[in-house]
Structures are given as structure tokens and as C-alpha cells.
Amino acid sequence: MLKLAGASKVHVAGEVQTRALDRIDLEIDAGEYVAITGPSGCGKSTLLSLLGLLDVPSDGEYWFEGQNVAGWSEAKLNGLRRGKIGFIFQSFNLIEELSVFENVELALEYTGTGARERRERVDAMLDKLGIAHRARHRPSQLSGGQQQRVAIARALVAGPALLLADEPTGNLDTAHGDEVMRLLRDINADGTTVVMVTHSPAHAAQASRTVRLLDGRIVVDALQAA
Figure 1 (cartoon, rainbow, N blue to C red):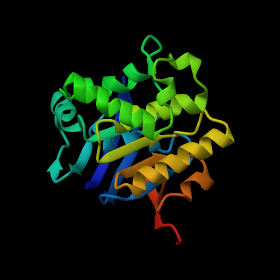
Figure 2: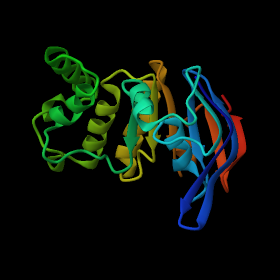
Figure 3: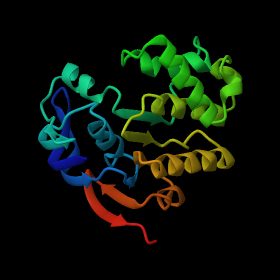
């Protein structure tokens, strides 16, 4: 499904160049649940951005569903990304001016889905995640755990094949963090490929495979013990 071959990413600020990723080779098959770990500044979020088509490598190749997208324009990447990739972030990124329903529906408006189908799909997703009773509330009226459920609903409502999660429990207490981890396991069990960045060894252990980065390179790529 995903393949990086000799992929590097260099950030340039004036005359300063920072190599965030250094010749990464990585393959992720459909249906896998992969945890990306490593210390702060090791390139985890940069790697997730490449996998999610939010950025392209400075060197090397990135094959997404059989297409080498390295060097593609933002418009072309956006077209490929739409409806195929869902994103979950640590900060939730919900729009306060919109209701829970409207926040989730927004993900479908970019796909050209009709109004009736949008309503049906949003209602079904909110019900599945146990927050249908909060559909008309604003994000600020929800707990942190509920806000993350809304963010997950928004990421999943378009039916993406790939779900990318960047520290999805980082702003949650232990109980709500455990709820989110259970949801990610359920999502993966339903067939969605999940790639998660995490600092937590306990959360990484719940994935089927761990990729550890250090200084922009992969130093560990191992399946979890059954």
C-alpha cells in the first residue's frame, strides 16, 4: 500500500538546512497497524506528513497505492489524498463555530457527497462512536475524550483506507487515552490501515508493528510479539 525508497526530507530556512529524514526505506501493507516511535525531533511527524501526502520527499521515492508521488504538485496530491486518508491530531483541530455534526460533515463536503448521504453517514458515524447525543453541541461543550471522538469520526466518515494518528492521546488523561486506543484497535480490526505516532511505549505495544526513528533514520522495524 505504502512504500518509501531512499526517501529524505530536508527543511531549508535561509542558509540553514535541516535533514529531518535520512534515506528512509519503509513498506506498509494494507491492514497493518504500525506505531512510529522515537525521541522528540527524530522525524516522526515529518514521516507521517510524507505518508499522508501533506508533503513530498526532497530525495527518493514514495509509492502510494502503486503510484510514485514524489515531486507531485500540492493540487495533485490533494486530489489523491481526498477520501483515501484520514487524520487524527493531538490538538483535535475542531472548529468551534461549528457543531459536532457540522465538524464531521465538513470532511464529506470536500468529496462531493450529496446532502442526504452526508447526513446519513455522519449520523451513522456519530452513533458508532457513541456521541450522537452530542451532535448539536459545540466542541467547547465537550470533554477532551469526546472531542477526540469527534475528531476520529471526522477522520473516518469518508471511509478512508488509511488512518494517520499523530499523538492521538497526547492531550487526554489515562482513561480517555485508553478509550482512544481501543477505538484505534477496533478501526484496524475493521480493515483500516492505521499508522500512529506515539511517545508511549504502552500504546506502541498495542500496534502490530513498531518502527523506531533516531536522527531521521529507522533504527528498529519489528513486529510485536503475539
